[in-house]
Image (cartoon, rainbow, N blue to C red; front, side, top):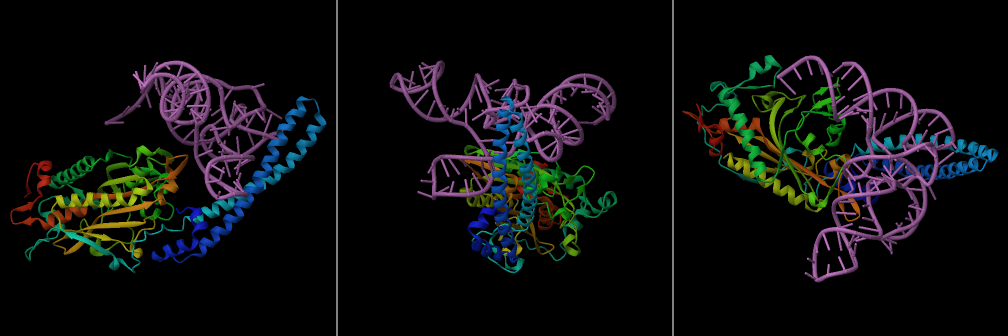
Length: 422
RNA sequence: GGAGGGAUGCCAGAGCGGUCGAAUGGGACGGUCUCGAAAACCGUUGUCUGCCUUCCGGUGGACCGAGGGUUCGAAUCCCUCUCCCUCCGCCA
């Protein structure tokens, strides 16, 4: 959510920034400012009446003590009249505040100055590329075939148990999944992230805090009986840990990591996008989240990018880092880098991580602040995947297939107790 | 699931319906003292928000788990909800 103060003070600049995200409903801003004007006027009137009432009530107490009942009764009558006006103003205020809030929620986060406008994902900027794309023989198999051949994943049983997009990992497949989780977490903890294991169900307020609600309910699985949502990413519970918190400056940066399953409805997806592990409804992911001083957030973003890059490099996968253009960025992000690995049998790049700076867009909603001198300020929130497992697994299987089995990257050997799957 | 008890500031813990944003203690911070430190003493110690002000600040309003109600006036009385604790039952 954008701060209304920003709209008041830098309206033109805000509109210019929003245009990078192709957001053109700038009349919303005028509406907000108009309502805000009205709101502040009502607050002034309301508070003044309340001041009068507080004073009069005190005097009534004095009068009664002094035995001047008639005077007290007269004043009571007066206050009762004020009360009616106060109630009316309060109702109007509540309404206008709700309207403002509802409109504010429709404004996306402002993109960073460096974000190119672009028109589609094709205009994203490749920052750099690394690793070696393997030359596979013509008969190379996509990961879903390899998963079947080595009995690593059973997609059909998952469909039977739940529905499509809920793969069942087994044998070396289940072990590899566990090994990757363990390795990713160890890697993050070593870099100073504090490990968490949060709830997988969250309440409405938590889903609101990180921006899943309103509007994106359709992407989450819901448990309506209890008012809960299954988390689409560990970002949701992790960031909300500090909701309604004022941190001291020396607590920053807060660095958190967690493994969780992630649940996404992915309504509207189809075709080769959803084949095998390319897009599933339940998947495993290790996430990193940082809460930082606003002056340091872009430095933190770069640090997170190289952190994730190091992880992918250690897996010996060909990758590229992409800076998203305004047209492809999420509603909540100010700057996002996507990581893609090359899946050699499918011959396509798969997104395995998305690292973003949200600046104060989330923390304003969550009221995550820190103390600076006499004042409190909002911290900046950032997060990234390190990493999403299914596509990593897909690329590992496809890129490392050999006649004698799947050769695993060295870093995983100790976690699996073997160098290859056969 | 059943029966009780509770929710107050960074923490602990008071609070007859009328200057209570809130006693007291602890902690933290600043100062005095000291070569320095401890102790002692003094002081400071919330958030949100309207208006005024260039800043410092000034001046109103709101907030004692959340939401309603009673009243001229609610931290204090009533109702609903949420959460926590104790006991019983059930249970991975």
